[in-house]
Length: 102
Length: 173
Image 1: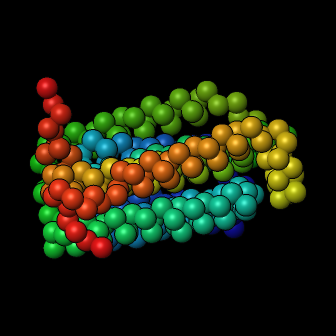
Image 2: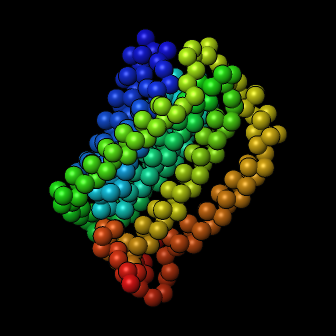
Image 3: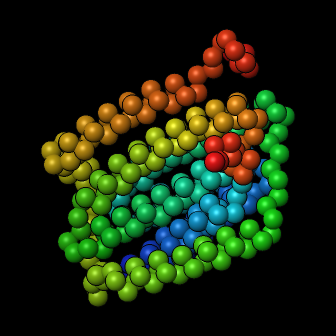
């Protein structure tokens, strides 16, 4: 059985990859990918901590169920926003969508 | 044995997460994202949470990735293909630097601050009956709020994405 710290290292690697995408990518859909990766890192942590606490607790599983549902909703709204932005501007490059800049 | 499975799954998760962000075509990026999410589901199974893994596959791979694929097709159909401009290398290096620092700090903080028990508890199978009972009793308020949130989100997304007939609509049926 691998120790808890291996799961923690894996999830922080996922957080790092997601933040790299958020900082360096220009396509709005790729930013959505990065957000999903970060949410998944958090979910891995929830399940791993729930599994390794002694005795194992159920709330880790339950909160992951809720978190997955919330992430799906967030993706739906984000994709709708991307569609609207594309329709209005003809691009989904987040560095060109700066009409609201003061 | 479990060590090998864990190594293979985490390799799958990390490599396909990187490929999802770096693939040239956005469609292939979405497919790699699906592989990464399936790998996370495998990790859940390894942690004894089969139901969560099934939920993850059904919702993420079945709904979110399919939604992303449809959006990519919608965005591509009107323009031929998405022109993704190359990021300046400076930005990519800055991103990699910030991401590495954050990952190091997060990993260090979690490993040193986590209440790690010296011996891992014996394998614990969460039963579906127990999970369902707690969802219906102690977590039922949150479940109701989640349902309301889903309803509001669907209405909001539909309102946002609706194509208006008059004005400068694209007229796609």
